[in-house]
Image (cartoon, rainbow, N blue to C red):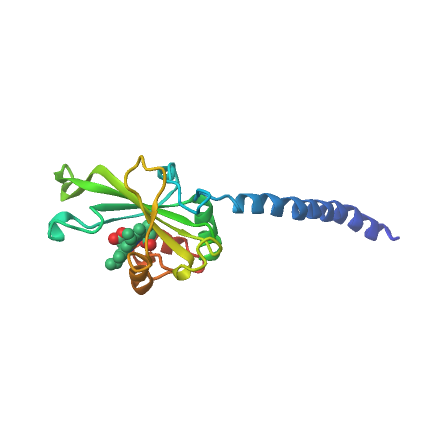
Length: 195
Ligand code: HEC
């Protein structure tokens, strides 16, 4: 073997070896992390009340104030929306909501309409939560495999699954991205690959 070939081999072989090691180790770690599920269920497929969502990714804060909705908005009044971190990472990578995605919307009342920054709507106290989960096995018969839940209170052990007509139908008809209202979430749009 010529000296040149030997030198080349000597410098390439370790690179190839480390490449093989990375190829063997990385996917295992990635898939373990990828499989982490944040939606937890009872044995009967009922969603346990999500607990640590305020530490997930915050994607938006719509407000349907009482004074613009005849005093009775469907979801009073601020809607602070969080997506679990692994599904957020998946969204950034693929622009899709993975199986297992959970999105929680926490409701907060309007606390004040005036502050040092001016007139407006300022968040007051927490009012409760609603959630949606995508799961093609568990919710195979649901619209686009998303199931919607309400909760009687923060202390409730589990959520109440809703009929498709009550929640999913409006999402299906009006939401821009796989049942999710991405048109109201600039954070989602900005992170979508290819944008
Ligand atoms: C008449 C239409 C309509 C109905 C019915 C409806 N929603 Fe929504 N939902 C929206 C809109 C619009 C948004 C985004 C803007 C906002 O929060 O107001 C939203 C947002 C959400 C989000 C945040 C994720 C997303 O898709 O943007 C969750 C979770 C959610 N709704 C749960 C529910 C549940 C649970 C029900 C049934 C009890 C329900 N929704 C019924 C219109 C609807």
